[in-house]
Amino acid sequence: MTIVYGDMQSGNCYKIALLFAQLDIAHEWREILVTQGETRTEQFLSMNPAGQIPAVILDDGTVLTQSNAVLHYFAAGTDLVPTEKLLHTRVLEWQFFEQYNHEPTIAVRRFIKKFLNLPADRLVEYNAKEEGSYRALGVMEKRLSEHDFLVGESYSIADISLYAYTHVADEAGIDLDRFPGIVRWLGTVKNQVGYIGMTG
Image 1 (cartoon, rainbow, N blue to C red):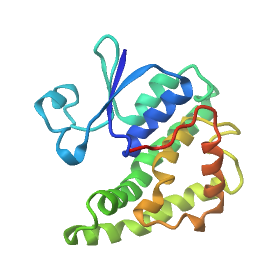
Image 2 (cartoon, one colour):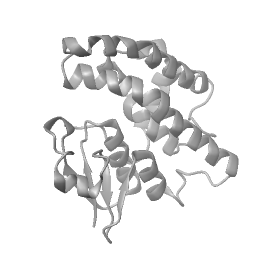
Image 3 (cartoon, rainbow, N blue to C red):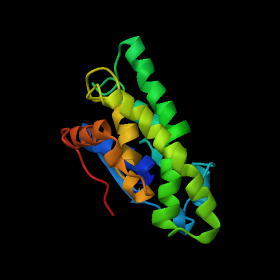
């Protein structure tokens, strides 16, 4: 059986849990906590030398890492990955945007605030991430103020990728009420068949 090493409070791991629930993919979830140093053990590093979660172990022992790559692996051939060349490229664009612009701002602010409780030595970094967080959400709002989904006219893994940290942006001290298109889209994602929330 497929094994997932992850933390359901991590947006990157939650992406995998949400996809697996929506595609009804059988798996074993093994909770592992970055804050407890569990990704730095010799055993974990032998699976993923980068020391990051999620890490997914296939039946034959093959290890998959990087959340958006894992989404592609398991969603390939389903309605969640467009087959039309341009739409597929748009999915990739949004996922690269998520990892380069969105996750490094919102997710980092959330980690500092929610998990580290805003320590004094991280306040400068926390505050410095605010502008970038709102800028990233502004890019999403421009699209979602006019469309139901990020790519084309249907739900895709692009939505899963961006939903993960956006729907908990309030935990990063971000005011989502500024973005009515995003707020509407969050409700749309939540109403998709097989949806599960972030637990823990």
